[in-house]
Length: 336
Image (cartoon, rainbow, N blue to C red):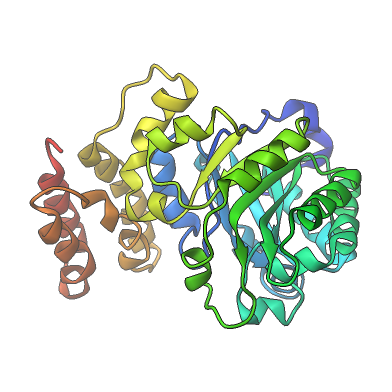
C-alpha cells in the first residue's frame, strides 16, 4: 500500500547512508535481485533498474514501483529530461515509500540517447539542473545524480566542474560518479564499462574541489579492500557488476564498512532464507528462474560451483518440484 506522505514527513524517515551501494543495472537489479541482496547486507543502499518517466507516467506504474519493505534503504533511478515529468515521477516514488530518487546521467546506450536520457545529458548541464530543481521542489526525499566524468567531445575537467557546479546550484548535494567518460558513438554500453580508462584521480580532484558535496565513487571496484582504500578519499563507494556476479561479497559489508556486530550470514543460510520468497513466487504463478538467475553467483569460488549453477539454471526448467533442486543447491553450499 502506498505511504501517506502527509503522515510521513522527511524528518521521520531514517537518513540514507551511501557509504556502500549496489549500482542500478538494467535487467539485473529488479525486485527479486534486491530482495536477495538484502538478505546478505542490511545496510547497503540498493537501487532499482533505471525506469523511464514515460514508463511510469504512461504505463503500469504500480508494477514498476513494486518492492518489498525489506529492500530498504532503497532508491529509485529515473531516466528522463523533462522537468515536469521527472517531478511527477519523483512524487510517485515518494508516495511508494522510496528513500531516494536518482537521476541517470550515465547510461550511454543509443536507445536512451535518442530520448535525451542518460550520459548525453552531460552536454546539457542547465537542463539537468532544471530537472533536479523540479524534483527537489516536488518531494522531501533526497534527489541525487549519477553521472560520468564526461562524454566524448565534452570531457575536460573544466566541463565536469561546470556540470557539477550547475547541478549543485539547483540543490543537489550528492553525486555518484562513474570514473570513466562515455563514448556515445561507436561503443556499446558493455564496451563503455571497460574500454574508456578509469580515472579515479579525476573524481578525487572533484572531491577536493567540491569538499562540501557527497561524492560516491563508481567504476571498476571489485573488493572490499578496494572499498576501504577509496573510502579514505570518497564519501561512499558503489559496486556494479562485481556485486551481481559475486553477490556474497555483500555478506561482509555490514561488519566491515558499517561496524555491525551481527553475525555474517552463510551462503547456505542466505539461500535457505530465500526459499519462502521463492515458494510464494511459484504459488503466484511465477517462474523459479525469475529469482534463481540472480543467485547463481552465490556459488562462485568452490569446487561444487558448476553443479550449483547447473541445478539452478538448467535443471530447474525440467523439474516437477523445483524447490527440491533449490534444497539440493543449498546442500552444496553447506560449510562454504
